[in-house]
Length: 324
Ligand code: BTN
Image (tube, rainbow, N blue to C red):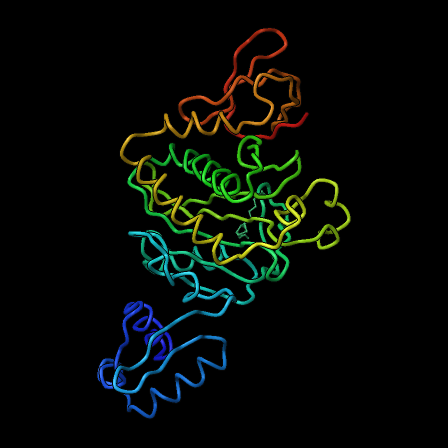
């Protein structure tokens, strides 16, 4: 259930630059005009810039900088992504909230965001450090009408989206380390964790978790990862607006996903390879069973890692890690 305050913000946001009268607001929200006035005063105290004009009504000029459902939705130019947003100031993991939401019929495109995660999850049961208000900790619920075996393509698609957004805002060309680490100057800036609920031939839902290090300084990272991790701020010497970056990611994701559903994987494969880290170079491949050297040739049509072993044999790998 939405609170009256949230409904009020949405009405103001929807009327954009036009004034909306106190009378109309009180009718739509079914509360008195003095209650409307009290809400407006409280919103102003919380950093919302609202203009009130006698005989015309109210108009929202600006929302506060902090992360919330409303600040992300304000001016978000998408058709289906982010129409429903769940925001938590602190949560163990946005993945958990997203799974719960998906099991309770959350819409395709539902976004879960948090200021802080206390038990952020990474791939291979690793921990993901999610410092308060310093990064983007986001899980996206999708209900794609594709076969479950194609779901890894969504991870690769997400990696290209994050790389595109990072490149377009920072002008620094990131690289994607297979399968889905986003690197800047060979250090990890972002990671993706895809989890899926499916039957044999049908996906119920997919949760794509994205962790992006945005405004951390070096000492915000635990000692053991300081040499391996980086943030947009460390790389650019600039503090970034987290809400604007989230909006950029959602818009870019929606475009890329819609094209993928329409045209399939080829454009993602090409884009992924254009950002691919160590393509054509010798890498160490680590799977659950073995570790060996190989040449990284690229990715296959289905997103698998394509390698050439030192014996000249071409292989496809679906899980594991690469190192150099
Ligand atoms: C990895 O590189 O190992 C994947 C990291 C994924 C982290 C994100 S942050 C938002 C979402 N919630 C989590 O607990 N994990 C993902």
